[in-house]
Image (cartoon, rainbow, N blue to C red; front, side, top):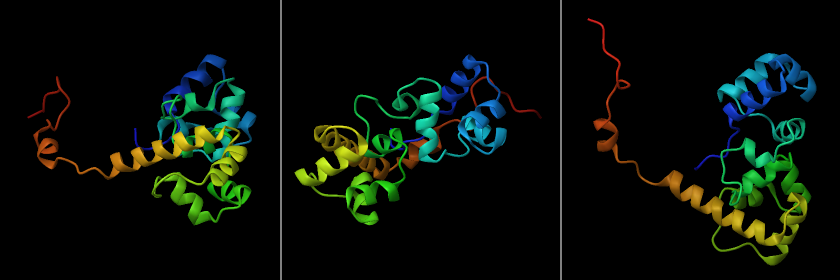
Length: 169
């Protein structure tokens, strides 16, 4: 997977299992109403990082379960979202500039970060330095997959309609 986003279907299932409406969940989170939760559930909008942590807490889930990542091998962005921090907050807390942390999180760095950097990020994200190094590598992989060329011929060969659907004449 290349993008770390909220799994809207997981959110909707958790909300329904709890017996809550979208407005009730929004109220528990301090979010701006049913529309916001509905947008998250449909994947039309992504919640601010603080809401990822709040959602996980409300539903007693590991935050990674709410994200489109392998919980055993998440990219750095997922670790940040799991603790509810923005890029700006994380950069400031680690003593890095925004652009330096952005490049690290998005797999735009060559080699591993220094041990000091890995420890600083680990402390802020509440993981160990080894987890940060694995997450940086996963971020690089995600970036490479996203940048991989697309076989446009294969896309053109795909049927325009879903199987079993017929066009009206």
